[in-house]
Image (cartoon, rainbow, N blue to C red; front, side, top):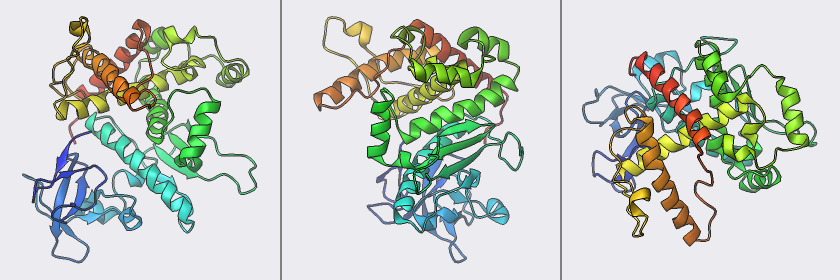
Length: 364
């Protein structure tokens, strides 16, 4: 995640801020330049002028979901002419009943995670096709609540571009219970989004992008029966042998899940490395093995320019250091995963697919 600051007073800002806590200017996110900007009132009611350096000072409006304290993204005049939802919120097909205050709080947490996902996708210059553009395979989100009587609980998943998220995942206690029951190391809203979008990009960049055979050579043959594979997985989870080839136990269930889990980890890594880089974090442990587990302050852009080897070279010492910090606080590991040679080969494939895709994209 990028670091942000207020143009008026240089106060540090966080991605979700709607107001500077120092000078109290309104703040909004400009997705075309992936940056937060301080705002001044515009010439018309409910319009705002961005103070972003070098950005055209034309009236913008907040996304309609700003009224629910669920979004701080801005719409340009051209975007406002065709709708009231920002670039990220326009992909919502179904949201929960906001008359329920508990649902409203859940949805705000969900939107925070989803907006962070979209920030990364924009930074990666990945194509994002809406349901309006492609009614059969375009991207859309359904955020659904379980039936009141407990029957037919909503299942989080992906189907031809439609990502469904059970809103109970926004409840920390429910999500932690599921994490323990399913034997997972990690379960977060952002992790769900990064995993499910991996399925979307498997369709878009692998299946429809002419990379099927290359992908199968690395992840396995996706033509094996998916439902039967999941049944077998849940009936008898694999032994610890999965750890050598797969980043998680769920990744071992089917090649589609292996790809989505590995995709999610690539997003975990590049997003965290950018934050570390911008904070100037350097790792130089005072041990005899220091050279092996050292990394200078990360330079370059992991989203666009860093090589895969450079990304891996920076990630190992950083994750080890932060895991150690967490343990010092009595917390679970920040990154409780081991990236074997086989897993790194899969991550390298995803890295190459993304870089090839970027080469054919025009910057937003």
